[in-house]
Length: 317
Image (cartoon, rainbow, N blue to C red):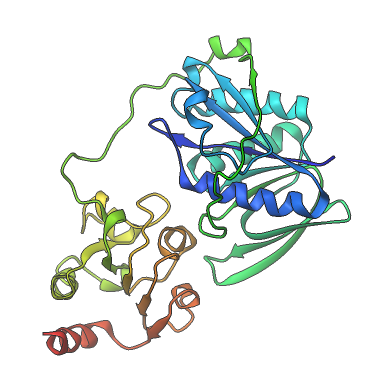
């Protein structure tokens, strides 16, 4: 029987939503072969993370102090050992910080093929078929690889799996190598207390590289105030220091699902799209008609945003 293995990501004692999306992807693969989905939980106390994983057929839990926080060396050791014993036909990671660490490292270590940026996957005659984002989301790439294989799945490509079952839990002994790690975690950083949480906002006006400079953001801020929306930015805007980090949308920022998402001068890199593509209503303004943001926008225009903003703000007032 084929088995799909899904290493679960967690933060501060909670399963990350992206792992529930990966469980949905794994369920779809398993359904085509009559296979099973195994969720792999690595934590200081794995028992605290199993209640939301009812979409799996089985949960493998490994508890050890070295696994309390994400530790690439420790996680690689444990996952590689589980793979060698369970022999899954595929291992699914999220396209995330951990997935980018562990997916390629395991592919090299095991000499398995790997397909990244996946938005759709299927099994056919012992091979994995995948559709992936390419060239910043401007192309859809079709790939095929022999099994066993490693896949990294784009967040937002699948819905979150519900904890519908009560799968058995297998508690595994941690490997002795966890006491001989070469890498040491120094500390973690958290958002500034009292800061804005754009993930809870119902309306967002997001500015991208097309806003050109910090001073031009004020026009977008005025639109946000009229709409009663939070102002946010894509990574280039944050990297330039035009807005604080807490207002970044995307893979390395916040994942948002507002009722209204107004994208101004945002091109729509894959990392950005995965953070906002589930918004209920997306309106995009970009002079580049080939910008990937238009692929997920409900409404869009290629007009000059500096001509649009004052006129739109006046009409809204």
